[in-house]
Image (cartoon, rainbow, N blue to C red; front, side):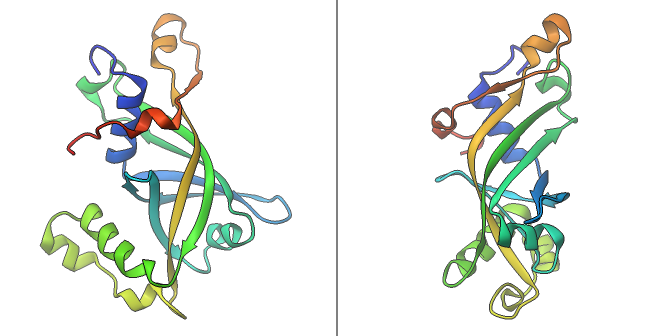
Length: 177
């Protein structure tokens, strides 16, 4: 990114290396709520996965209104970005993961979030917490639209703007793949 990587490469890097996003939901009455969540990226098809308490405000909001918006941001990019940071915004649809999918997602989430086996064993919650009457659920976010911080514009005139990146451009090779 020293030579400013393509929008699709920046998007893939950001989505696959940022660990947290701020999720914005709304209640059925339109009351907004923002939550910072720890997510992992599923690459094909492109989806973001996290877990939360079933009773969390954002979980209840998702149950009532699947449409959300979110931001992903990194300020630790040093040499990778000409300004040391990058960020994206998105809109999409969420759903709780239930049934047979839970086992696969449970394994995938913990393997991606904690590549070190010992750390994974320390942090992995039992699968029964995510099933049936369990207190947590995994959630899946399907991205419908994605925008990046327009670094080129910022470097030219310090105008804070976004540029939309077509989702079809995100399907190329991912970093580390």
